[in-house]
Picture 1 (cartoon, rainbow, N blue to C red):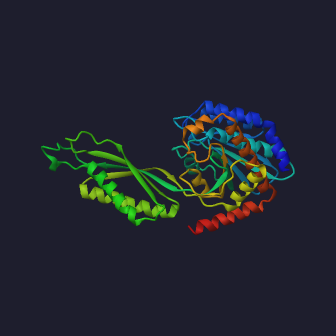
Picture 2 (cartoon, rainbow, N blue to C red):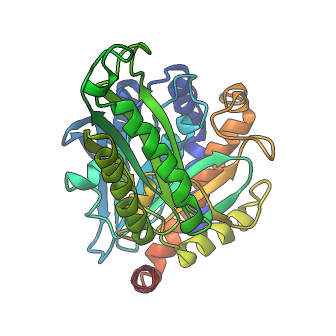
Picture 3 (cartoon, one colour):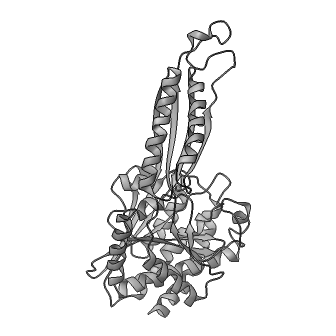
Length: 387
């Protein structure tokens, strides 16, 4: 059966390459991915999927469904398609064609086993937290497991990702002339500087894999005026979402203390909360087994730790795995010129093809043996309970 699935992908792979190139040539930043989403939606619809265009507040998100018989579980396939200001410097142009190619191949090849496929187009990964928004609005919760693909310097899977709390802190003081009547002022900027210092003192007393970084997000004004407003942006991270909650609480107390010391008030706005990925070893093993059987390039061991991603919010509530497919030279960083230089070359097309074949054959493994899904769910609950 896997041979039939591979043949189905071979039939349409030139179309998949064409779509990848078209999306690359029309880069759209987060929440603006109208061209990319339409390309993917149209092709899914042409191939017999029931497509819902625009989900909740996100008009560039979509959901496509196909069912064969009465299956117990819903297998979710997710794809991203937003670009960076520099263009497709993270390879998202390849994800949609690869994922929908896998879905179409399974639909056309697997006739004698029941299955439910749900494909989600998820916009705004690059800083917009699209999946976070979709979950808040009730989407993505109709799937039992989630699979993705992503181009990179090696073919491998991820084990953990960092939870992130992105927080804007704004202080409000009282303006006054800094030379003639400084005693009448209450410096919001002093409060922000004290918060920076508080974070530095906190570093000694958090776990080693905690990350805390910050910047001034609004300039306070001329030096001869006591600043009445000042704002900073803080990113707090940990590989454990529950531990991050503790760090956030301690950080918020630092902000409160800075305000008390300076006679100012404050507001805290969390613009993004990304959760840590729960390991999905069964799905990871299936992906890598299929990658090896297909002869995927530059196969490496699992990445034990990665940065922050809104896919973590999905994998915090269900088993999920991302197949990373070798595309750029080993050691290449994401968001780089190399991703742009190879974006329409053979390496990119190979990435689309291998991604589609690895995801499709992994989906077939789950369709053929639904107990793998059941065991993945059991393992997920166990791992999460220990965090």
